Image 1 (cartoon, one colour):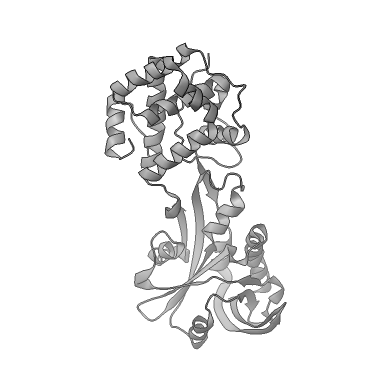
Image 2: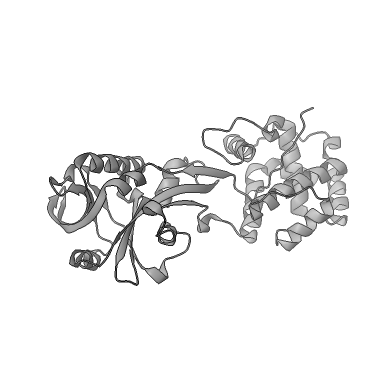
Length: 358
């Protein structure tokens, strides 16, 4: 018999590591010299479009850097795959932050099927270029940019504008030094302003994607009904299982814990290898390959009437307790983003209560 070493909570989302392009900051550190502001009379169907030109030491550096930027944009189908933010410092100067836009990075790294089903963990880098004072060109550029399109392009002092590598953008952020939002690349880069090279490494899960305890509960209810409609209905009509459920509730377990554990036991009975540790990480860099594998199977296989319940002995009180335990451990580890020492079930239940998860 296969030893099951992993639980699964349907309110959680498997974590997927997304590593952004990390090569471009070195090009910027070595060759990005200045900014130029202006207008381009005609660019495609755009007329008198504002221009933000990044001035490089030489043509090769500009070409290499914008080859990275255009690769992001082509993969995303959007020029705003290149994130740009300006920060105005209290000493009168300002800085330009440039980095892979997180939203676009996630969209091009995770398939549409998985986009709403996983929690991205982003590892990204950016670059901050500082200037001693706000130029008239910067003040003019800031005054006319209002959700309109503008051109981002490289150039050199010797050869001028390299318009063939340009990118059409819509979004640009402007912040004062004191009002930069947390969990942004601008915030990280400004905090590490004095570090060598003025580049920053950011590891985070976007705050809007981190669920609350209530959202986890609501998602669990939805996902269990979504993936196990037949199993849940059969369990609700099975008198022997209802007796087991009654006893477990008297022991202090919640109904959702019992039904989730029963659904997992049914899934283990059908495909036991889903819950077994896999030493070979997948191409998507899942931090939890087992959870991702379970999710992938559920997304690809709709439950049908031909799938029976396991024998009742496989839903015994002892097996149910064990499944509730390992499911609860996975939930706590997910919610606290940390490891969990071996504990008795009573302690696990107390942890769930403390965290508001029960």
